[in-house]
Image 1: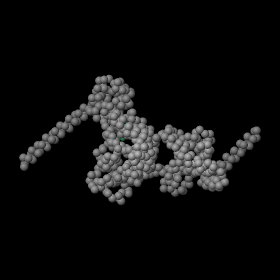
Image 2: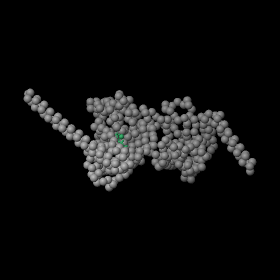
Image 3: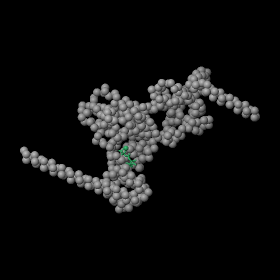
Image 4: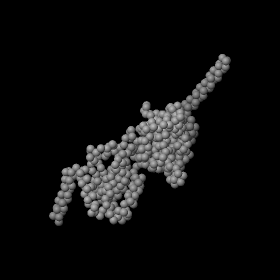
Length: 493
Ligand SMILES: Nc1ncnc2c1ncn2[C@@H]1O[C@H](COP(=O)(O)OP(=O)(O)OP(=O)(O)O)[C@@H](O)[C@H]1O
Ligand SMILES: [Mg+2]
């Protein structure tokens, strides 16, 4: 018995040594080509068919590779594969299992057993590419018995894609994407850089008029459930929101709440990093369904100051140059000169045109502090389906902030304090962000927090009242001055 064990141990040792030797002697590329050749030769006489699914096809990322990886990672954790690679993305909560190099895994689909193998080889350093490619070439090989391939290959791959989507939705954190600097692509050919999206803002924590809030939530729900409606009416399945209002009134928080409510990814588009309409279109093509595409502070991303003079005869067609750091608007019905810059029509096409319909179930959100600075073309009805004004904190909104920060309802607040708060909140014209600061500072002592809040709001309301009075007095004085000047003019005549 002992001898048998010794012989087996030496055999395993020899096999392992030969494998290491092969890997040491031959460069990985040569070994890979040789293996492929061997596979091809072997396939002619084999009763199996082999399918290669490489990570990168030409210059594009192969979505099927990612799907297989996710699908296998869900099954791999349950199997007894010898070795698995474990990965967890930065800040991600999901752990992904995947096969190591040359490791195999068996799967059963509709009673048919198939085998997966993961092949990893080093990429040749001298390979020319117009963008950086990963150092390793990775791919899966699927082995199916020739007798079964006709009837299981397609359904099996469809099954994998569907499962992968389910896993992605269930396990994976939703993502916050932003476009790379100067439109550069990453090593996987993606123009978007992504991190897990973990913003805690929800419609429960968002302080705003409850009726308006319910209206927006209902609108979002109808949108998400509206596939049949959009198909029936021949409309693209997308919706546009324009959020406007002073800084600190919750526009960004609203976007996060929308994403959390619908479980959508966010694409935060930095327009100043986009050079041309074509680039904008490519970015759009690389967004996924079930996502919110955001352009924040649109008035700051695009310089619309000379709109009126420059738009003469130009209609909607305006060209943004990149003179002083901000894209600058120019006129022109002639598109020939526009190859190297973003145009307003390009931006409108981004949200409205034929290209905006590639993919589906997408929401466009623009935010601005100065709606009056926006080109009317952006505001025309049908462009942005909903215009939402995010206003200063009202008493109704204040109640939500009190619940968020102090954990108290109106029943927990003394009637006199509540009356004072109701009296001064609207007049104070403070943003939810300003009020949150006061509440955060004193959150450990509820009574003190409420006292400070009443004080701060009262002081601000009084300031506004004096300011308003002063401006009224100035206006009256100005009016009187104008009248006197008119009388003098009449006397001269
Ligand atoms: N309506 C709100 N409800 C709850 N919290 C809010 C609200 N508005 C502002 N805040 C608080 O203030 C902070 C800043 O708000 P946010 O960034 O959403 O404002 P904004 O309107 O996007 O401002 P800006 O115009 O400067 O981008 C948030 O992190 C949040 O804590
Ligand atoms: Mg913001």
